[in-house]
Length: 95
Image (tube, rainbow, N blue to C red; front, side, top):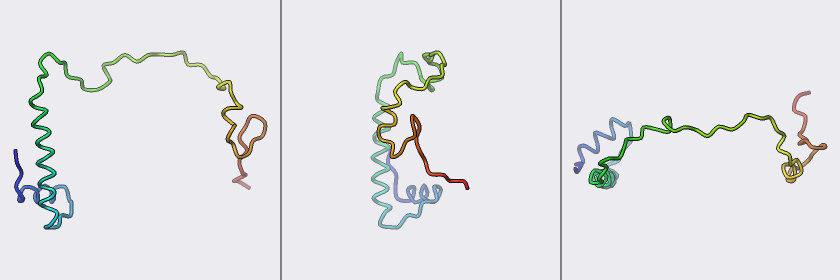
C-alpha cells in the first residue's frame, strides 16, 4: 500500500495537524515506511499462536500483605539533607 499526497493531506486535516507544503512529501515517505513495516508483519506465520489481549488472563503471584518499616532506616536516610532520629526533617509549611 502506498499513500499519495492528497491522502496525506486528508489525514493531516482529520488529525488536525498543521502541514506545510514542504512537509507533506516527507510525511508521505514516513507513513509509507510505517505501512511497509505493517505489511512485513502480515507475512509472519502465526498459525497456532493464541491471541493475547492483555495481561488479564495471567495469574499474578500473591504475597502476604504485611506492614513493615523496611528494616534499614540508616540506608533510607543516608542521603537526607536533615533528619531527626529515624525521620526526614522538613521545613514547616503551615504557620
